[in-house]
Image 1 (tube, rainbow, N blue to C red):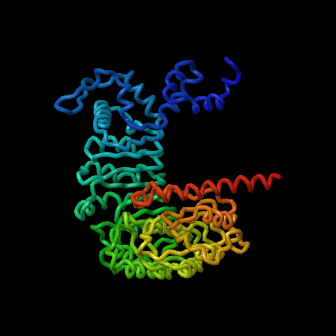
Image 2: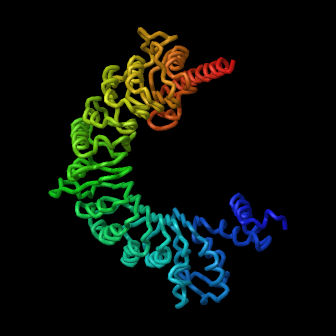
Image 3: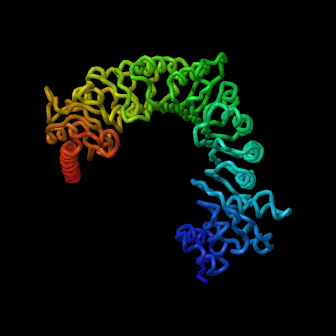
Length: 509
């Protein structure tokens, strides 16, 4: 054997770069490769079905659609099973698969001396399940002290046995750092009241928990979550059955040191009531994903929400704010709706392009961003109803760049056809933005690609192209002018790339 192959680090490196389908053959070549190759082969499972395929063919059968154990596994079968399952660090089963979990449950029940867990070294469990009794038996095997990441689906038909086992993760998995609990289909009030007692108390015991993604919680339940000192990221869903339909009579302490807070809401009134109940929210990032409100109330309810956000959030802490709407047609509002956000002077990212159509002039755009000199990412719009919405021109864009000189990414629909008093050779009067490397102009009006390219090249000397990906997504890809518009923007990009090449040649020369 070559001396290098006596070095475990070299062997592990070889195994890590070996194609997955050839690892079994590599494990059989010699003893030096056996354990490292098997470790890589079994480390990450996409399905526990792989384990059942390693069992003898005559071990299981089917009767009336149910899996049946034909005989107890012998010692050799047990050794094989444990030899592989002890190497598993991750199980990522993203689709329902009943038979393998039932089979593993039957194997464990058949042996009174079976270990409490077949997966003693499991770190990550991402599992889509129906919550049946056999699923409960499998979950019992997977909830081990080494577990760090748990993602489980919970359904309306979830069995009491499954909930009982799930409730043990607070003590069975004390090192858990990330929990995601999803549900399908949407839970009603009765189902939520049934499940929550099995979930909230165990979570409150996890003092190392950093990431939590869960459906809606009432004011008493959310209070337990606020006591988790290590929590950095929180995702809550406040749906149609929300307990936040009314403002809570309690004043809750809030969140003192979050990195990210994401609320998924069906109604902005729920978000208003949620934030109003908190004493303070200190979070670096806040994202609100929502389904459309009544257009008639859009400006009023958004203004009210932003006022409450300003009152409850630490103005110095918040750096990133996103408003994400799940609708083909965003809400149309005036730019002054966002006035309360001016209190957040340290804002570096603002993303509202999927949430709102903002009708604004050049002066309105400058007024919107005037309070955010540190802004680096600004996503205002990649689509607007151009015939009915006021949009800024290049004059507004130039003003924006002067107010926010650190911009590296911008999405903004403008009218590029209005070039009055624009010097094509020096559009910004010598003031350049050398940081911006990503620009989306969506369905901006355009009639002269050459002039547009000259202006953009003068404003952004390092920009090589305008991003056209938005034309492949709803609603922009349904516009009747898509083909001619994309041809014009493709011409803009050809000129920008040519200018970039020439500029590099000049630098090299």
